[in-house]
Structures are given as structure tokens and as C-alpha cells.
Image (cartoon, rainbow, N blue to C red):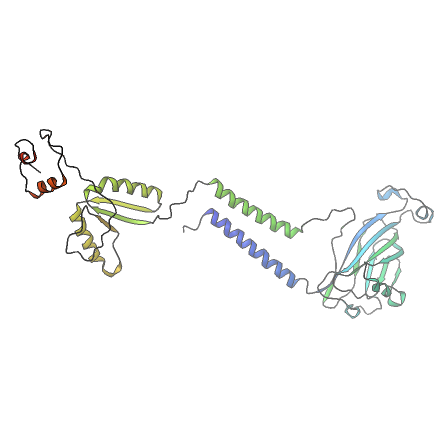
Amino acid sequence: MEWFSAENVVAVLTAVLGVLASIGVLWYERRVPRRKRIGYRVQMDTPIGSDVSQGRANVRLGLFSETPDMSDATLVLLRVENDGSQSIVDSDYTGRELHGLTAEFTGRTVRGIAVTQPPGAVHLMEHFTPAAGMRHSGSLIRLPRVPLNRGEHFKLLVLLTGADVGSPIRITGGIRDGEVTVNRAARPDDKPPLFGRAARLITVSLTVCVVVLAAIILVRDDTPPPLDCARGELRVTGSTAFAPVVRELAATYMEECEGSRIEVDPRGSNSGIRELSDEGARAGKSGSPALVALSDGPKPPGHPELRETRVAVSLFSLVVNDRVPVRDLSLADIRRVYAGEIRNWRELGGPDLEILL
């Protein structure tokens, strides 16, 4: 399980979180907004009367000061909007009475109403008439069956008396294949967040995963192995002339290449070639054995199945006894000596001594 490392786990979790976030967004957009929905939010609820018991001092001039029975007056700005994915027509309101929705201000009495519409929605104003069901009594405002396209809204500025600021406000009514729900109000003094709660959670989670992954990569001391590294076992046999160098190379390779094991067992060139031939015969068609034979000369005849590759040069030096002052032997002289054609140093300008190899 070489892949089961800390950085791989964090990378997989980051990828899974990203995929789940994308799927969640698609699911939310397909599942939630399909319903018809009217949402409402209280954008302002502030005292304008002289009664300081509501906890907010104010200065009043003109009508606010002269109008009677306004000591406990409050002013509410209520936004009603189509925040679903489908348009709402007058027949979508399921109530049996003339009006479509009812706004209730618990504990307060409605004194006056002003309806406002956004630019481009002047046509909505013709629906807010008594004939269409627009009226108020006590703590209730009955709203007509206003058709709203997706994203359209209107606002109610309501003058009330009676209860303190913050008393419950709700809108009720039936919508075919939909609902009426309260939205979080954005107060005029509130600073709207750049991201929603879900977006912030996803962003923080992804950021944590990326930071952890980067920390693992930067902190750990994990130098990647060379590109030519291989895992497994290998045995090297053959010429003893290469043994010191091969042992050094094997130790270096095993140190740099994790998971490799090299055994150096030199027994001579001919012995190594015979062993390689025998191992190959036993392996048959299953593949080449994990064995390399080094030879200080060409392979002998009788081994057509072996393939030789020149990988190094082995230098041989001729050492003579210090009693022999010969220092200028040519390559031809050395070959004649090893061929047995010259048997005495006298023939090469040296003393009368027999040449012993």
C-alpha cells in the first residue's frame, strides 16, 4: 500500500470534498428552487414615538411630534418577494377569500400602509386596491393576490402602534405547489456577507486541506529517487577483477533506491558465465533470471543463448621482480611472453633469468 501516504490521503479528501460540493450545489439548485415560494423579510423595525421605554431615544419634529396617540409608534419595512424558480399567478394563491396573503403584527395596531415597488414593476401597483382585497384591521394586513415573476418583489412601509419593537411579524397564506417562508432580513445598517454560510464552510474546508497538503510536502524530507531506480533483488557474479567496484556501486544503488537488494558474489568469469547459462535454462520461458555475470573477456563458445554487453574496461598491469631492470617492454613483447615464445629475460635485454608467470 505505497499509495497510502499522508499527502495522498489529504489530496483524495480534498478532491472528494470538491466533488461533493459540486454535486451538492447542483442538487440544491435542482431540488430546492423547483417549488413556488414567496419569501418575506423584515428590513426595518424601529420606534418613532416618544415612549423611551422601548430603549431608543429619538428627536421628533412636525407630524411625528404633533400626531396624537403616537407615543408607542413603530415603523416597519416589510419586503415580500418571489424567491422561487417559477412565476406566481393569482390562481396560485389557495385561500378562498379575496385576498391572497395575511401579514400579522402581533400586539400592534396598523395605522397606515405605503406600498412601494422596484423600478420596472409599476404594473404591480394596480393590484393593491380594496377591490382586489387590500385592507387592514387591527394587527392584520390582507394582501391581494399579486402575480410575481421570479425575483420580483414589493415592499410595505407600515405605521403601527401598540407593542414594542421586535414583536413577532409573520405572513401567512397558501401557495399551490409551494410555500410562504420567512427569509433572513438584511437590516439597512447590516453589512452583507460576501459569502453564505455554506460557501464559507466549503471554502474553509478546502483551504485547510490545501494548507495541510502543502505543509506535508514542504516539511517532510523526502527526496525522490532517481528515475532509473528499480525495486527487487539482483545477484552479480563472475569476474573477481570487477568485485571492488561492483560492491561499491551496489552499496550506492541500494542506498539511493529504496526497495532494492543487490548481492555481489564473484567466482570468476567462466564460473559466472556457466551459472548464468544454467539459471537461464532452468527459468525457461518464464523470463530471464535476476542474475548478471561479469566477465573480463568475451564469452566462450557454446553459449548462444547468452547476450554480452560491454559495460566497462578492466586495466591489467604487468608487475616484474625488482631484480629485472627491464622497463621498455612493448605490447608485442608482452604477448610473446604470455604466448611462451620468450622464456628468459636475457632475450629482452635483461639478466639471465627464467621468466616465471
